[in-house]
Length: 400
Image 1 (cartoon, rainbow, N blue to C red):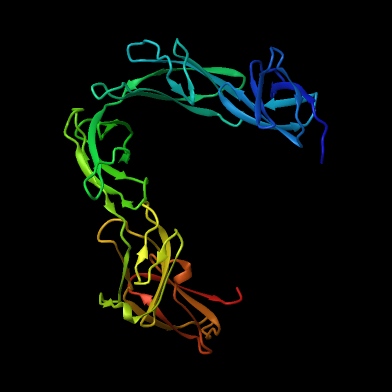
Image 2: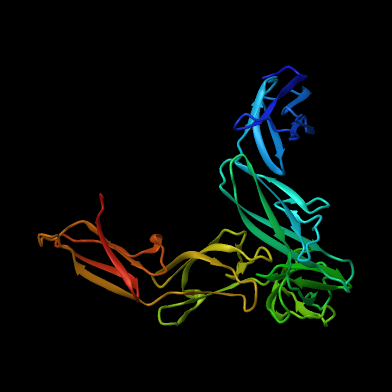
């Protein structure tokens, strides 16, 4: 449908009590060019000569919170209602009472006096306010540090809740890492991270420094990976202890090559079943593919979560596994010891129940793989392939 061009768009922005909201930033995407304006003291706004569109998606910035509204094209009397419960205003200071200018509070920064204002919508009754301030000083002699504060504020409709956040310094320590490839060549742009710990990264001269928000002597699990080039390098992980010194010798992390995964199948009792006895092997998902020699090609350094089906000696495995990306590059499929369960199903009157389904749920097995069997005319049943261990038996009619 062709619409007229050059229509104006105007209206008011008010809260849910009808009070005008002044200074609200509004933006519309007009022919891939973002146009913006702000509401006046009376909450009014106006866009002139907006290009043709079926609907206008308008983005509002209300005290640092994004709100999206849809209004009619060419509407000169648009009334945009923004529900609100109350504002949170406050100040962020350091432990000595000095203002923390530039601290980040819910995505916005404090002013030169450490002050901020947060707008909240009409659905919230409380708000968890978090403030942080970080700095990374160039060079390895001075390093990253973070201060953090948090407080829960109870919101009051139409009122401003005042909070005072006092920043406390987080502890910091260091781990220096040098990542190399299989041939020992340094990879200065490898991705290095400390699992489970807040950290920042500095790089210089082939060394990656992790500045960890934890006290010296903290155990850290350091992992390195590299997705550049051919992308055929496997990640590696090591355990380290953070140091109080920033200039400790780096730990070397050597990336290996991604190798195809060998599938090994074991019968109940632990006997390995050779490849010649397999009647089926199927792999799907995660970009993995089955090689002619029966191994599975790993598609990416992050590994792959695949569905694998193996049939052998009348046994069948059908489940999902994560392909290993580190040595020994093996995926073990172990068939559990199984048993046969027999019995007879009768009703409360003692009469046999024919045609019911007996289902046995075993710990660790999903509904798609549970053993089941029907009852005979005399109520008897035989369920095979039940893994040894604790299980629950259920009976139900097939038409229930």
